[in-house]
Image (cartoon, rainbow, N blue to C red):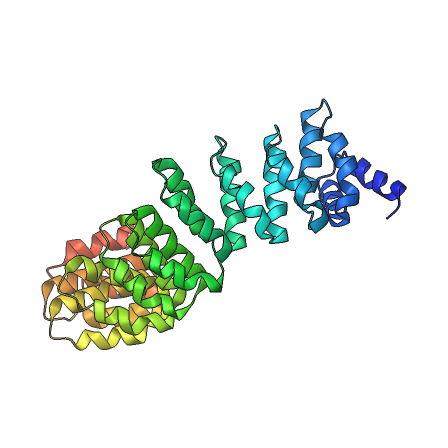
Length: 338
């Protein structure tokens, strides 16, 4: 592209139109190295708004010839420039960007730290190797910044390393590893994620529940086993994970309602309530006749959580029973008029 065309795009970056500016940023970024000089000139402008507009164009650059310049820009005095440079480095996918991006994890600006974390996550397995050193740092904040970065990793090659990190001594590392495994979606993560349901840290087992939900149907069988665990908290956490999986878990869950253990049936009912689908509500209506009071009560609560027409009709039908006040309360909690 000739100099006149570049100058035209540079002028567009000062447009009052958001779309025109965005379009110009993208086009300039695609020009790579040849666009950097006019951008750098505008980064010296006295007007902060103009400096920020031109900084945004840097994030679109994916020209390897510009890598060294972008690395230098990660130490620029403008926050917007450091952010854009780190985004561009991630888009290139070059391992040479790892070290300067890791330095940005120590920034006092949360936006810069967050962008660096996302950028390192895009670089995948090679970034993890460098982050491992930061996890050993004596400074807790440094450890945590490195740990949180792991959650952004979405590289299939990193699965084995992330599985190992689910056993790490730092809760922040276990939590981040479990989140990353859910995003990657490899079935090999199911067993280690289920093991994390027993973790003492709420963020760790919470992320494990969410990730198991993302892994979906392949995780159901092992979660059903955990739903029959002797430990109540394990049953509850497995129920939440199954609820996260959604409608596809309804049929296998319903089969466990034949269990002679009322606590297992109660856990099934809790999971069905979390799914919030009409098919779950239909099954819960049958549970209203369960022989155990606590199971029936759990069914009422779950129907209240679902709150659809099927649930409300079922609750209205049992208002004459001894559980009348409980049923009424859960109907009203869902904003239904009797």
